[in-house]
Amino acid sequence: MTFDEIRHKLKYKTVGIAGCGGLGSNCAIALARVGIGALTIADFDLIIENNLNRQYFFYDQIGQLKVFALKKNIQMVNPRVKVRAFDIRLCQSDIIEIYRTCDVIVEAFDKPEMKQMIIETVLNHMPDKHLVVGVGMAGWGDNNLIHTRRSDRLTICGDEKKEVSEQLPPLAPRVGIVANMQANAVLEILLGVNE
Amino acid sequence: MKILLNNREETFPVDSLTIVDLLEAKKFSFKMLVIKINGQLVKKGEYETAIVHDGDNVLVLHLISGG
Image (cartoon, rainbow over all chains, first blue to last red; front, side):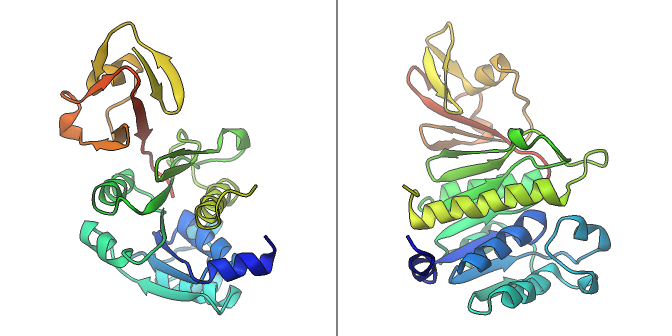
């Protein structure tokens, strides 16, 4: 497929991203670049300086709500992307309502309880939706531990091992790899397997 | 019993296992797991009663902080 053909296919697709931090912001930008038609993004959090070590925000955005700063950044990369932005802390019923019209959903939370909640919500209440989750991306190096595996409509990207902690912080390179793997998995779902 | 566990073939010297037994046998921790048997989500309250049989396809996903 040429880029024009790809762009033509993607412009009718909507991707939902739950969380606008390290995974969510980087995944959203990658999808915006390739010409996704629409993005639905949600996050309640504010940008702090340390976030800039991995999240797709800029120094002058510190203090702003992530979801609206990300919408602006998406639009600066590709003004054709339609963005629906929700500044809320997602719960099960929000997820069902907000991501109802999405073709694929990307999980981009930091807390494991939230990851579990969205996986259960989608598997139990939205079983036709593909869900791409990110698990394990802390630290640096160890590129070869990062992988993607699938189980029915659930795709898992990450090393499934390195948990974020004070001694093992998340950093742009590794987080970016997992976020881009998620975006790449989304493309595979939307465009089919690249022969 | 031969099953697919996280896409790898594994053999156990029994006819069947509960999820609790499987987790113990593989030394998987209890916190924050997502478990599916043949595409069906297993709720946490069902780990003692849900049974894995020969030929089953099992997913065990350990959720950790970060994202």
